[in-house]
Image (cartoon, rainbow, N blue to C red):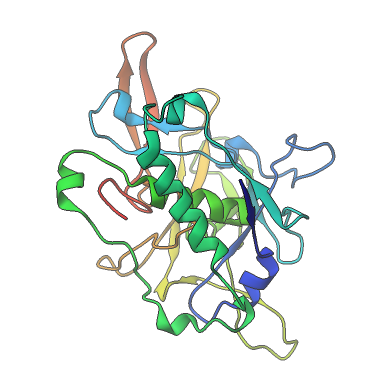
Length: 285
């Protein structure tokens, strides 16, 4: 099947104040000579797929990073307007009786249809859309089910070149560890979330708002105590404890609440993982 897509530049220009968007590009090493050298795993970039559900039934599933945030006009995106997709036997089955079957194909097709139906994106009035668009099917939530159509929409937004704006309202650029971590550790924090905010230079500005929610941040640093994953990472959180957070379609599954949890793998023993509580959640659509 062939589906036609709009360039991410059109999407970016159509955004309004307080909505926010972050541009996606490759991490170092993904493509030869590409990526920002400072976006390394130790600072919370290029994190792998996580599935705490393997150890906690019904637990969050996070799809992992496929790139990192880029500065405005320095993003990486597809240079052709056509994206192909198909279903393999594990997904559909030869006779439509695979893991998802024909119903799964139909759900994914509906997600593609939404993206393909977008027209005149430069003039879309986003004020017609709610800041928080996620709803919940409580029966599905009780059965630990995730909506395939909604997951596909998130993945398509990534393919268009947008990443999680909430996560990158504040993000680490550098970290210098002193004699006693973390007491003597210093951090360079930058912003990679943008908004169409008027300025004398008529340029897109950095923004601390996503979907009308103000984000501050704190830093988690384990001083290199748990293996090859992240050592320090910014955790953007709103000062308003009652705010609905991580609401963008570009937010990864369960990507809102960053806490370091300890679990035990029967094969390898104790390990740390990041527990998430935002983005598309179980039972959400």
